Image 1 (cartoon, rainbow, N blue to C red):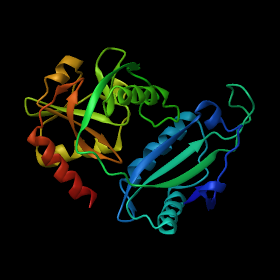
Image 2 (image 1 turned 90 degrees about the horizontal axis):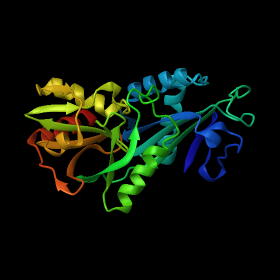
Image 3 (image 1 turned 90 degrees about the vertical axis):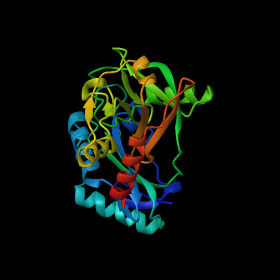
Image 4 (image 1 turned 180 degrees about the vertical axis):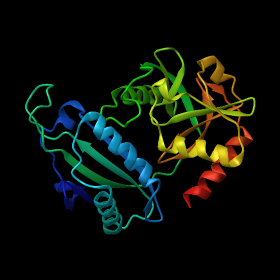
Length: 273
């Protein structure tokens, strides 16, 4: 597999990053993961807009324009002959001196990789994590490279026989899953946590919210407790790789399959194509 590393296209086994890179040392960076469908990155502009905002928030200089990054991504898709795939764009502050201070780390590392597209699951079994995300977290809107809370939550869920972890925030309200955004149906209204819940501002989440408007489905941002989510008429998880996936159960209790989810899945697939 060929990857893009700091302006060069090299075989993955020869692509190396310094052990002094702050992305490796501290998770000092961010990334974007997107679906490639029929040779085209889906929602490229939205992903790049979030990527640029995240870099500005972290005060990491971008060395490549959107156009240059898109050209690199398209070359990777062609070179690796993957028309349906997962594309990952990564940025770190680059090599620097030991310690938390970012002074002197002035050469960012930019990487783009391509991966085979996994088969999305028909549904997911959620298990509520004991870990929490911070309500109002200023880092939450971006895919910051340090994802240990989400990694450990997913690992615990899998060890206990579930597919994915549900994360509450520090106020005790539903926030997100380890790798996606959460929606639920309550009295025929499509609900999702508010922007300040501490969850990632997902690109697929934004697509689903737009589709609700196009389909005439009522949509609200709501705070919800775990008990409220358990009583939902249906729930689903969204992500750039998997799309829209219904929730089959939460902490062992079955969650109904609302017909609203099927409507959104069909509309999402049509948008993807």
